[in-house]
Length: 357
Image (cartoon, rainbow, N blue to C red; front, side, top):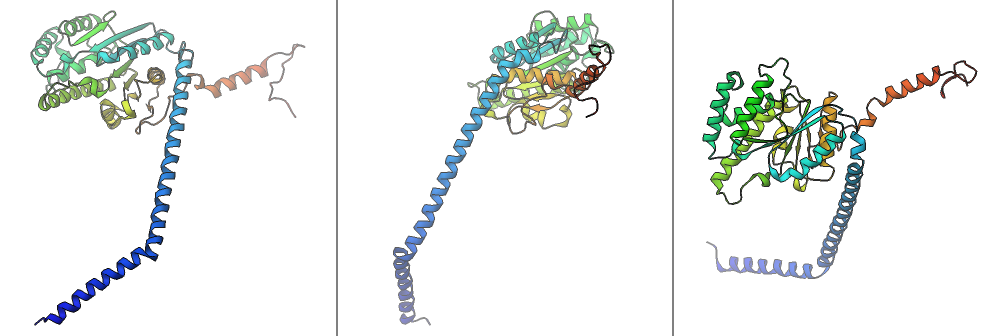
């Protein structure tokens, strides 16, 4: 049995250990530990200040670059899309001022026609199923071949139809006359609105997407908001999937508040190889965002593609600038021309780098 002396020894041991701890903590250990903690805090404070300074410098540099790009934009793109027909699609009226700037740059680039097409909420939102069903039936009667994917909903098929109306007429079963009739149905049922003439085939497409919060309704309950978000995503992915296979140079540009592309359509497009044919740009809401879109479209017309901007999943800050395209070939041609140029005496004059030393 455990007697009283065992309990007494145990209690004495506990109090002795506590006393030793207090003495050491209040004496030599306290000073050493306090110095270590103070040093660590100071180091963390210094690192924090350095990170803040670095972030401010990078932000300033980025703002300067954006301002420079914006000012240089019209000159950069001048004449690069001469005679082209370009459609600018948007999914919310909130980015109207941005698409105005995109259109202005396309016109600076020499585009002969710029068509503005705004997708209307009735194309995807809950409660508009009847409008979509009627439009679906009317289009099926006009052009049965246009809507044949029974695996998709009416909203998805109508969304996927839009790129089919913009692709080259040659090789398509949708003639210009049929396309005009289908556009009329979409407009009449307020699924899209069009600024300008009914578009036929296009040489390029820019899809401009608003920030996710602009596409939501704050007053909706959670269930309805979820249904709306799912409908929007299904419509967008169906449209962009068809656009990726339409054979038309295309760019998806999105507003990314807070430099965040983890929400919205960019997250889907940049994360799925099915959309590799499309170029993407973020920061559409920023001053240089519209120019990024036009530069990316220019690269698309020349057979290139990429993901551009400043978010974490962007590949590069900018697409290749127009004046750098073929620079080496131009230099070589210029050198050959100089070498063949006649001198004052009528004989060929050597180029600057030609001749023997």
